[in-house]
Image (cartoon, rainbow, N blue to C red):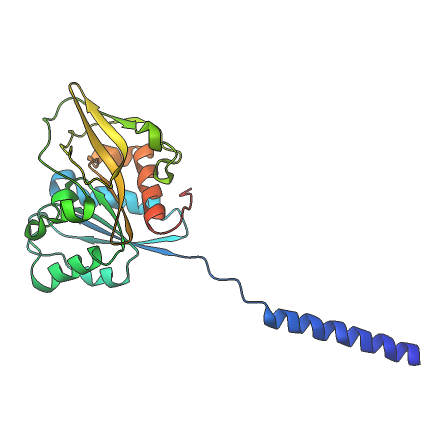
Length: 249
């Protein structure tokens, strides 16, 4: 009888120890979700259709949730900019939008608060009422573009070929015209160059601004959004700027 009582006591002590350990062990933290806001306001490059394609591609990754808001280029505002208040990565594909008042201040507040941005093509001149966005935030130096016609051959910067934004990305051709951007901010890391006969310009670069990660690409022709290498690069840019690297597939 004493043996049985000792056995029961031993079992009880083991159970209590297990319960105590479970109470002291923190629950597994939920996986980080990167909240992405895409702004389509560039009719010239079919930004709405293009960002719809990108949104679907990004959301293959369960760690990414996207909100797409739409406006016309050159207009006076973008409806729904309040979503920037709860945003981890902003993807502006905008062209000369004349933001005013509260909307302009909200856009500036986001950009100047050290949060992530992945700018696309015409976002170098996204806000006509804040053209300093290009040099101040993106680190760019947009001064027009070369004529349409020859394809732009996209080549990687050899010294940064292992950068997370380029992971799994191969060199490719873009049907879009080449933007003039020579003369970037000194802290920009050029990841990709674009080449046409007689011309070579930086097309994709990364930098930090007020502690936040920034990636900008002057690519963004509608044909680019049907190229897996471009989409992969954009997904990498989102996860890198968003604070962690997660494969998009």
